[in-house]
Amino acid sequence: MKWQRFLLLAFLLPTLIYGLNQQECTNILDKVLPEWHRHTELIQQFRKKPHTQEGLQLLRESLACCQRAVGHCDTILNDIASKKKEDRKKQWRVDLKSRCEKEKQGLNAEINQLQIDIRRVEANISATALYNTSLEKAATAENKDRGCERGFNNVDEVVLVLNEAAKLYEEAY
Image 1 (cartoon, rainbow, N blue to C red):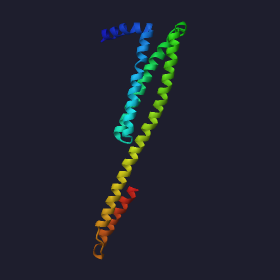
Image 2 (cartoon, rainbow, N blue to C red):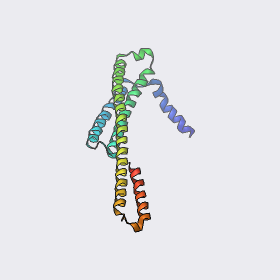
Image 3 (cartoon, rainbow, N blue to C red):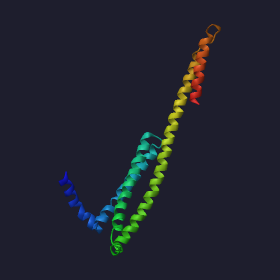
Image 4 (tube, helix red, strand yellow):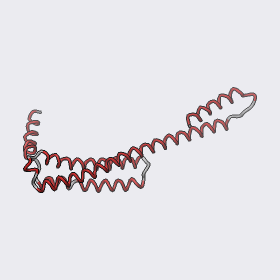
């Protein structure tokens, strides 16, 4: 166990000391675009099934794509922030930083919208389930009411059935 920690530290230490070079930063930033494309594909699929559990899952996957893209931007921005002042002023880092900040700002706006949409779909799914339950209870109450033969010889039974139907109607509404 101690050897594993030592080897892990030995391999990570140069990365932590020297940071990322221009090519590594560009490679990381290039991972943002595929995440964005996957996000847009998922949104298009969501629009075909907007208020379903499957649509909700598509939105959640889309949110995860955007969050991974923000993570890539954060990796680069954190690396740039850890550099000495003269290293941060290199033109390629300045350009990369502004591009990452712009990408991150757009992604964060999209993440906020996705979170709103997820809450909206969850509320819609819950409301639909509650509505369907209410319809079922109302139909059961109506069936009890219709199925009850009313007569002077079964007054107690009629009162019991009508009370059950009334309770179901209350639960339904």
